[in-house]
Length: 429
Image: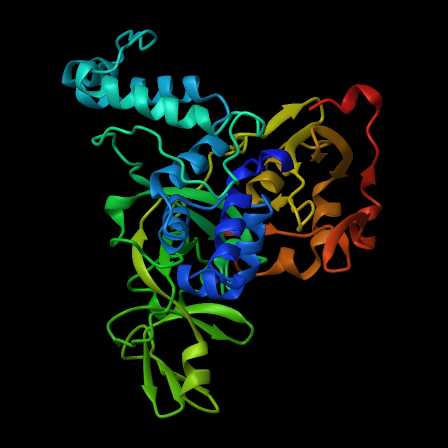
């Protein structure tokens, strides 16, 4: 989960709003120019969301501001301990630049990375970068980045820009909407090497689709592949694969327009095309939620199975007594949305008497514990636990009730029976 900066440290979010208003730009106008939704821009200005490097750069250029400053702000927000973060980057650089070191790693020999120094040719650029990032951690009374004055920080060219792009991973069949980052179906965030993608994809998002989602493209994409898409650009090419809105879910298909009818082509000559009748060409275009720009084969594909009894993986998963435990952080305005994983249920069934426990965390404290056996889990999931994609992808579910458009700490009835308040010794994160 990406960190949320404290309100009084949301300096660049305030700066974006100030510069926008000074130029007489309405929020929707700036959002349209940057190719994000107005609601997502509002979350950035309020400090609720930290944008990707790509969106931060587009915001800076639209406001005639310094893109390097905005990218530094994004990195500083994600990495509070800047010195430690840069040390890790230097260790990676040492590995990448040394064939001898890579050989030792490959052979299983002892390697000591601690204390490696960056090459001299990078030292001055790194010092400049660190000083630039430090400015973003100063208290507002020392340096107010939200002010309208121009901020000039010496920054030497040559410091490598990040080679990774942050992308939201949506659950199987989820609609990305106008902005994938705030879609209800966001399961997690992934990072991909930019070299794997076309330059500057617009509003990229990804899926690990189930069988139903790839039925019409099964010769090109297999269930469990990582499929990366960009926003629909208005042009239709029958050789490309599109995300199509059909029967209130997303399917992947090659398409052909025929007047106001959208034809979904079959996977091979033995199949039959499906048709979606639209009122006009504008509605036809709205049916296309994105276009596939990359497909990556992964260990989640056909034939891959987790070893029996192997503990599910993840940064927050662990075994504590009779519980398999995962942490779930509160996210504004979506509340707690635990990921229901099929491998968790499989592990519980291989260890009779164990239960799943979610620690529901907000403001650095465990507020509630959600505890379920495999059967209770299936009962709470209902039809979602019986969907074709469940065994491969799992499901991200909202467990609390909504009031005034935002989720509260009041649990939905089907989940409340499995929730309890923690004991004092269990409240620590």
